[in-house]
Structure formats: structure tokens, C-alpha cells
Image 1 (cartoon, rainbow, N blue to C red):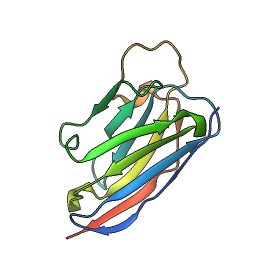
Image 2: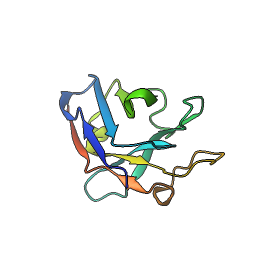
Image 3: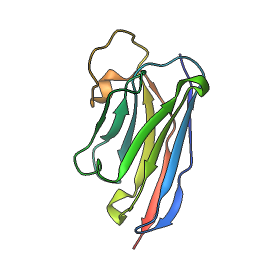
Length: 124
């Protein structure tokens, strides 16, 4: 099993940026960022295939967030700009360990490894 460790969360004022990072202990394929706010279901923020050539975003975030990865470092990043109070949530990194997947999934069940999460708090 691959271990995932997130970093970069914290407190930020509305309109500000944050960059999250997730370091994996081994080789991964599709990786994603999910988030869960109190009282809400977990949702996919963004995901990226191993090649980096294909990405997907939640419609409400694609103009503000950018996912990227560095396979040499086994690390995936989430650059978040123009943050809003409603972006406050626990952000999780997830990894699929399956090769040969032809499309990116936004479903939690498609990812086998999960990090512990990093808290992002956006104040108004």
C-alpha cells in the first residue's frame, strides 16, 4: 500500500492563495484531491492522470484551482487561488494504484490510497 502525506494547509483570508502538496511513498497512477466540509459529503476537487496530460476539475473550482504532479518526486500539487470561505474544508489526497485506466474518475471508490487530510480554513 502506498502512503500519502499532505501538506500546505492552513488559514488564509478570502481572495488569497494556498498550495497543497501530497507526497506518495511509491508509484501511483491517477491522483486526486478531494475535500469534505462539516456536514457535507466528500467531493472531488481535481484529479490528474500519471502522464499529467489529462486533468479534471469540479466545475465550481476549475477556474481557480490547478492540479499538477511531479512523478520524479511522487508528488501531486493543488494550487488554489482566489479562495472563498466556502472552500473551507479538510482536503484529502488520493491515489489510484491501477495502471491502464483510460479515464479519470471523480468517484472516491476509484482510489485505493488516501492521506489523512490537511485543513484549509478561509476567513472572510
